[in-house]
Length: 152
Image 1 (spheres, helix red, strand yellow):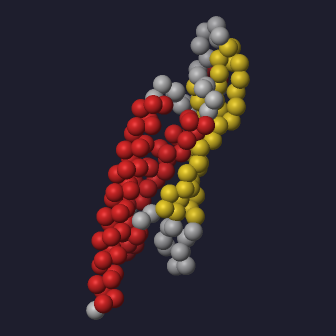
Image 2 (image 1 turned 30 degrees about the vertical axis):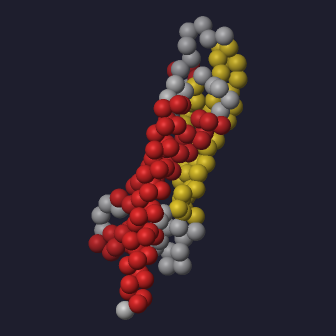
């Protein structure tokens, strides 16, 4: 009986702490997105498609942003239950969304005041799978692109 009580206490604690951390992370992301909004990030391969008339490129460099985010205990249990019956695993969707947005923000913040970042690419991978291979420990999201500065 004690093991069951401990399990439910850990479950409630995981839910509370995980929810607070996720809400705080989303607030941080939204604030930083407002600050970096003037820097456009596009998914075009040809420079000519975005080059303004009369402008030349002064520099182009690779910029990256990477983040590793772990799933909390409560969401891991929810995802395991959802895997039994199938369907949309919403607890992983928020994990991926936060990771993607954070990686793009870190990439923008790493750039040295470019005019635009083009050819955005996003890669994801799982890190630290559990022994049963059905549960994700953490995810890594890598965003990279080419930071372009125009010659004025």
